[in-house]
Amino acid sequence: MLGEKIFRGTSWLLAGRLVSNLLGLASTLIAARLLMPEDFGLMAIGLSVFAIAGAVVELPVGAALVQMKTATKADFDTAWTINVIRGLIVAALMLAAAWPAAVLIGDPRIVGLVAALAAYPLVTGLRNSWFEQYIRDMDFRREALVDVLSKLASIIAIVWIALVTRSYWALPAGVVAAAAVATLSTYILRPQLPAFSLSQFRKFFGFSLWIGLGSIADSFRDAATTFFLGRMTGNAKLGAFSVGSQFAERLELVLYAPMERTLFAAFASIQDDMARVRAAYLKALHLGFAIFLPICAGMALLSHEIITVALGLHWELAAPVLAFIAPATALYLIAGLSNSLTNALGHPRALFRYKVLSLLIHIPVMAGAVWHSGLIGALAACVFTAFLWHLMSIHVAAKVTGLTRWAQISVLMRTGFSTLAMCAAVQLVRIYVLGGPGEGLLANVINAAILGAVGAAVHISCHVLIWQVTGRGDGIERTVMQAVSRRFGAQVG
Image 1 (cartoon, helix red, strand yellow):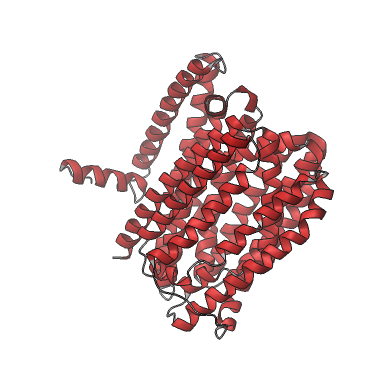
Image 2 (image 1 turned 45 degrees about the vertical axis):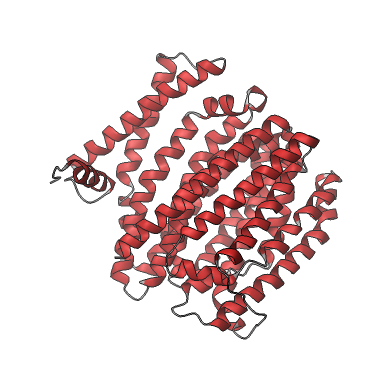
């Protein structure tokens, strides 16, 4: 029953995120054709200010509501009140930080941009807390609808203003428009009004504090990359980093976010049965890695073709960004499953300590890498931090579940070996058959099709071969073959 709820919930969220992120990708591609890399660099800085200000007073009350075994009207009222107050504080912090950020980067336009983005936390702070009851019930259909509606609003605002003004103001307009539609939708789809109350504040504070502090560490880690790149290499390279990263980040929004949302609710619902938690976690880890790693590795291998076809030659700096960030994204996604488990079991404090350690390592590594090697150095530092965080997450999950580290790593082995074989095959075909990167739109499309087909064939073949040799145990191979057998009436042994 739980497995069916997880599958159904993930399917709804996956469908919603797929549509919304296709729309988001379309808006990025259109905006990239109408605007300049420097515009995206400015937006990246503005969003970093928002991320830091938001993290300083982060209290994830929605997660707290889902994690509670029972939730009363007073809990929903308190959650809404906390969000409203938080939105006001974040907006005030952003306005206060706008001028110092402009001085730090050396661009006065940041003041107006950050001031405009300050409307985002004000609007999202009004989100209907009662909407989280759908998540508690593992009913994700309405959340998927909200995703799509908000992204439609965003793309309309971005494209319209970009066409009219050819200005970076299209980007913050899209962010604010999406927030307004998303917040309004939560009241339309759940017509139940919360009231102003802080009667249950202590209950939320105890759980949310450590998640919020962890978010601060995450935000400072991400902001360090943005500020070092912007200060040391200029807004053009920062813009290339921002746009190149967005292709990999779409995978997080499309593939990971639906799984994380449903698994968090599922882990919270069975937190008293550790045997079920361990089994569900290992299965999620295996399936997640089997999906995330080959897709991210494929994007890295085809980064030149993807950027050239999607954005054009004037965005060529975004290709190495995607080549580095896509594999790093796979590591963060798998680590995210461990983080979701840890939080659902009520151990956010343990996770926070390692996030601080990761931040303290990342900042000097990033500063030195950018100073020494510019953009490429920053990308290498991002991969290093992602790998380090993956190892830390495995350690934390082992502590809170009693699973060994090897038990977690072993479920990743088939996918790891198959992906290495895929990478080798694609590179050999690129060098010895295609003779290197293609020139022109058509050549890159053809090369991407050939390399993609070779990579997929090698990866799937190796995965199945290793599965056969190792005894045809439980895993994604058996899941797929059983689905095929049900469809065509065969039996899988």
